[in-house]
Length: 115
Image (cartoon, rainbow, N blue to C red; front, side, top):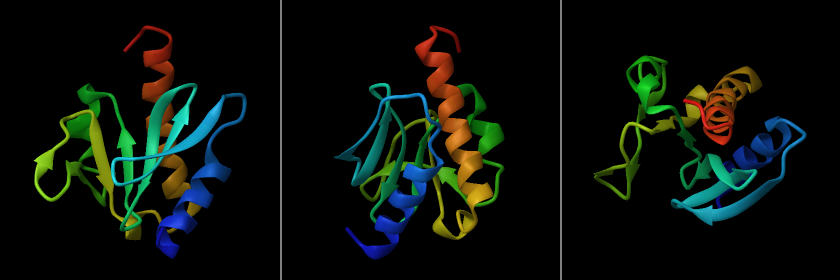
């Protein structure tokens, strides 16, 4: 794992909320963070952040600086439920916390059966 990816993974571990079962798993070309068995975010190879989002919020969230549609490999779109965030837009803890919050919001709604 590259140093930048490792640093991002450490920051994610510290930022994830308590009270949940959390584990990290290698997938999607990075280190994915599973909360209660569901993926919330992943630290990818180039230290960008992959975020699982509510597909209904995709248009809104793609307007946030640094956000772009997530792709698998070099050109396969992952769909409206996934966003990648560029490393330079994760520089401070508030930026990272925002995106983890977005992922947790989807997780919590999905876990409770809502949307």
